[in-house]
Image (cartoon, rainbow, N blue to C red):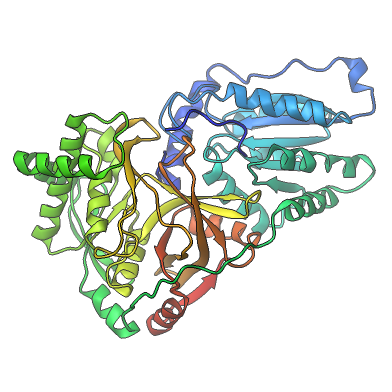
Length: 520
């Protein structure tokens, strides 16, 4: 929910890492205790109004460390706006508000309420704080709300789990419009008039679907894409190689979906970075600086160290006979194992028809290898998606993206060089990707022999300063409501490629013995 926009300026990380960050940062607020609004006076409690407890799930009122939306983000105006708006626009309800970092604080809220509350609104302000799960056990009608580009990862994963388990008392809102939240909150009146929590959930679903725009014009610009046959693609995948840089371990690894893989240590990558030719690094930095539309808050020294990381990664790829590398980037950087973010290097590799993938996400890297092979060079774009029903959009957000969406010889789109958004350090990319084209989004999972699949028309690039720098918004082909259903099974990342690849993907899956699961 777009409660507030900061001045324009990411966060680009897998959901397991964010869960770790949430657990670590939870102590910041927990040490200070739960911040709770004053209890309402007894006279107000006897007014006959339903009593609704708004609970904000977050690390701290001002974000103490790197995570979505970004370090230093001030949530206090966001919370004040939500609470104030609901109080003004829902006069038939009585509100109080609290904050919680996780299940212990959420349980304390439940214990303190002791039946004096008729329902909950849980706003997910950071991604992985597990608060809504505890409050849902109350059996009270519970409205779960995404603060978009901030809590969206946890919101999608946790909402999918509620849907899968048919949790009867939890409805949800995933909209950038405050009025959509207001209308959903008014659904508590269903219970006040004698309805069940399940009827409350049904009412929130009706509000959500009625306020979601109908599908727009999904016709797309011409984009003939030449693909390999399934047999040729499988052969290209088998002749590829992924280097997985997770920690200081190195050595053989099991193939992923038929793609050979090898583990490489942080130390090897860091040594290659140190050995990179300084003149060549300066030349690469010069080219980036000339090519970018702007360079924002990134020093020349950072550009050169990023260029050295690109050259180092390329030398490691050559040494191992590989065409794909994925690095546990933030773990390596924060742990002092590597000394430059690989974001710009990944950007450059993807522009060249090679594969650079974030967070040592091997499954997404394999998916990128498959897409680049299938399309004869088009890059996959790994992302942390956000769903906005107000615009009928899914937004693919990450701090790494190619600016050659149609392959190394294709058209070039503008890009800016900016800091990595979560921590405002290093150098990353905001790519203003082409609009009006069909995109195909997939994930490939060998353990289940499945390929997750949906498509969408690229409609805009969102410059919001919260969360990842690149944000490609597409209007999905199919049912946006169905898109809420798979995140607990597949986690957060998806990989997007330009082109209508439905036929080739289905044919490839059949040849591999995989099943295609259409998530929209």
